[in-house]
Length: 148
Image (cartoon, rainbow, N blue to C red):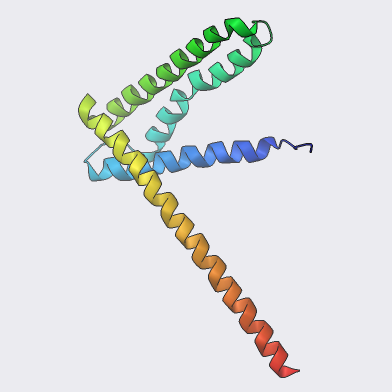
């Protein structure tokens, strides 16, 4: 069972997650009287992802040269670079919204909750769309059957 890898699907997922994150953070911080704009949030979030992206590329490269017993160094390096990304995101959003550290952390938690709410609403809308389309399809089939 050979799996095909499509880079456009992964790129699309990444861009959609980044846009959903930025939108949720903008919604939350607008309600919390933050002064950040959508473009600033998107820029800060994109820049904060750079160490994480570099960690993936660096770990892929280093995994070809390190033995399995030296793999703990890869995990530590990955953890440090992910932590660096989180610090960049935290400080960037703190500066953009002009929040204190505590308020920024609260806004990040609320942003994650907003993402969950957005995804639940999207799931409900998708389910509703499927049910309506099935109803219209069945209705069309019944009408075409009665016309015959």
